[in-house]
Length: 378
Image (cartoon, rainbow, N blue to C red):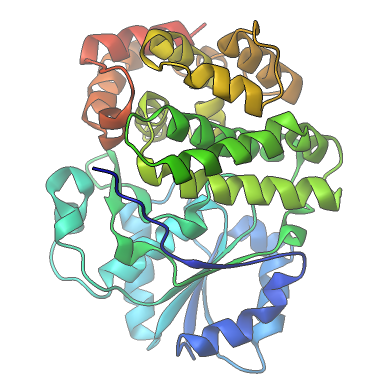
């Protein structure tokens, strides 16, 4: 049986963020908590958004989102939300800020330990309506603005997923102009996050042809039409930025049919204390290894991915991604990111428990994950 799910309304174009007042009013939000990070404050983007809404709503700024959102930060933001009498959330930033805001929307409307709401603990069925959330992405990578998931490092050290249609932002406001100042390396890393979403969604064995078609279109924009490389080369190229934000949004729409082993391992590595590893960069590094692992379990899907990426039929996809990573200036392997052999056993255990592993086209055991991580070490 096929399940087709697309959950939110998206306003998409250059300058779309100037419609935020109307969007907030539409959802009855008059005192939003603005979830963001200090980097965006320093870049002036937060002030830009606050200026747009200041004459109509009184926002409360929470700018302490970590690079990978943590349960501690969620609880701190939720406490502030209640103390300030907020009635909704406005997430401005990359996937971390949007994921944090989703978890805060859950925390302020649900009682008990947050752990019980994680996907691995059966939380999908426990999550009901949450506080209204509007998402404004400032990167073209996670697509969290249109997805039903939130990834948080819990107090036990594991990076876990909250998943529910209730966590999907009420409206996504996608303004490519907000990505113009994104540095080349972060543009590359977030762009490869989007491309990995598209690829893993296509490879998922779940039946959802519309989602698969959306994923292939995202690949065509990012890789086939060269907009990923174009955005890295010229961050103010409006066409490249528009298409990469669309590819990012499409990647998240596509992964309504699931992700795979790349994300299982990236979630594990993202929880390593002290390293602060970027999720999109991890996806880029793991992708070639997983493409080789899955090669005999995907039918004709690699041929369709090559077609979308405008590649010759003889091109080896894993080799192509490795070369693309190099051209984008991304790390060649995990060792270059500070991961060591001592980390492998714990990472393999974490990856094998991650919910994304269940939609990988080839089943992966703990031993398989240990070998995959070792292969990605370089």
